[in-house]
Amino acid sequence: MLGFDRERNGIWDLFREMERLRESFRPAPEAPALNLWESDKDAVVTAEVPGLDPKNLEVTVVGDTLTIRMNLPEPETRENEAWHRQERLTGTYARTLRLPFEIDAGKVAARLINGVLQVTLPRAEEDKPRKITIKAD
Image (cartoon, rainbow, N blue to C red; front, side, top):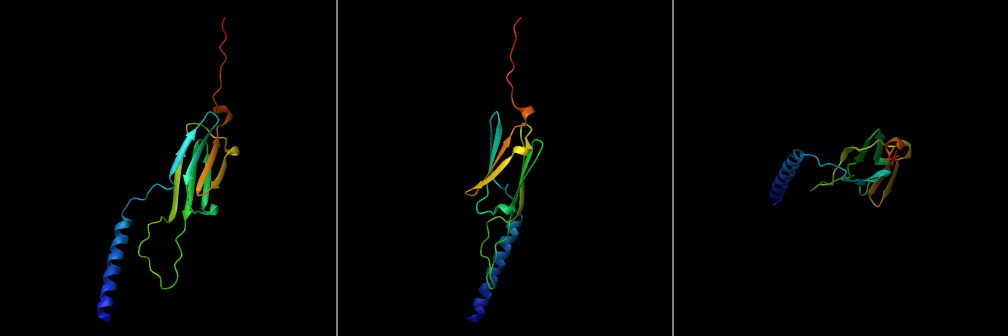
């Protein structure tokens, strides 16, 4: 019976390895998932980052471009443990968005609330809409 168990475990190891190989050929999902909306004064981007420590997030702004980079660490395993399925993303992911206006980089604010990163991107003064008075002669 012991020989059968060893053989069966070997077959399951083969299936797990084949599944890992198959998964490696899947395209990486765009992460994090984003929403973007704008007003006359700013834009707001929200990104889903559940369970992520803020130290594993980076937000950068250059001109009219926002980049959100996140590092998803590999979960720790204890001795004599083996994965049966691992679907959660690991590694470094980045999303870059080009906004339809220049950003006042000095006033950008980012906060993490219940697993959602919210980045508020104020329009640069020179890019804010201005009402023009029309003079009649």
